[in-house]
Image 1 (tube, each protein chain N blue to C red):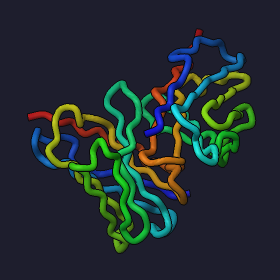
Image 2 (tube, rainbow over the protein chains, first blue to last red):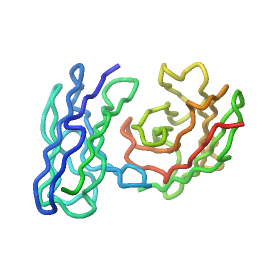
Image 3 (tube, each protein chain N blue to C red):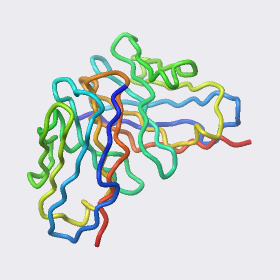
Length: 108
Length: 116
């Protein structure tokens, strides 16, 4: 099983600032099948990035993903109110599908 | 993009079987990977398993002995059964789907509480 470790656990920032979130895998994620989701309170996770760097349909360009192999990064430029949420990375390369423990982006 | 909606009891007694159904709309239920994913209150996400097309399944080894996922194409529905539940199975259960393993469309989720 691929274990995904996200850091930091919590990120305290102000609206308009940039957020940088990390996801490290315990082994290589094949084909870079690494996705990022945002979960707002009381809602289902929403897909932001797939295959490490591709934005999902309707996702604004302030969201960008990078990385390969075992180290991946989600960058959010110019934080907006709805961006203060919990973010999960997830791998779909190997069964079982696994999620990271999440990073909470909170208002400073 | 498909739309998904979970339905089923919100309360299940310990040792009984949790049963949920997900209704799919907006596209054919065929040729998708349909997953169940759960989230205990205040915690992270756990993939339970998926069913694909004609009924091929893949389950998380941590739950495999208790899980059954099935599909009813005539009703555009797929279902989850989780046997012998305990309080540790209390969670919000999401159904989700995608053309590949990646679950890119999600239902809103339904809270299932295990309690006597």
